[in-house]
Length: 130
Image 1: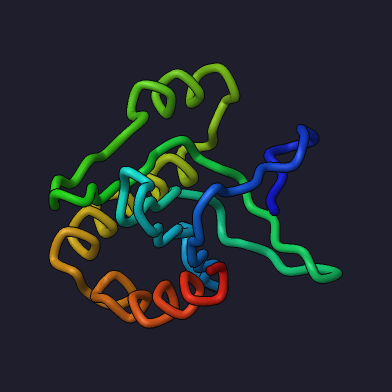
Image 2: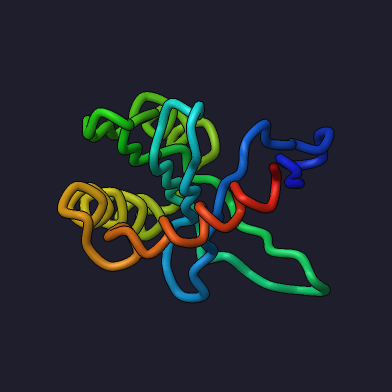
């Protein structure tokens, strides 16, 4: 279960593995079918762990690998709008853009955590739900 701000709980209809790096500006969801995306990565502030919870700020940009292999950089319009509306500092804008570029390369080339290590865990989670 997750929360978006102070809103109601968010739940998933199918198993997913989530990755919250301790020192990176992103969080990733590795999804099982029928979810349309295989991997969905949010560009965020560095996740912070406290009292058994993890929090971060979503910086709008998303890198998505669809099941057919297509790679999408999503919500660039929201990111541009929020830069002005929420007065994002220049260093935050730079970090978010650099992170999105790195993610496009890493997710597209299946490097590091996007290279398939999640597959075994997704398989285990699927078996546990049936």
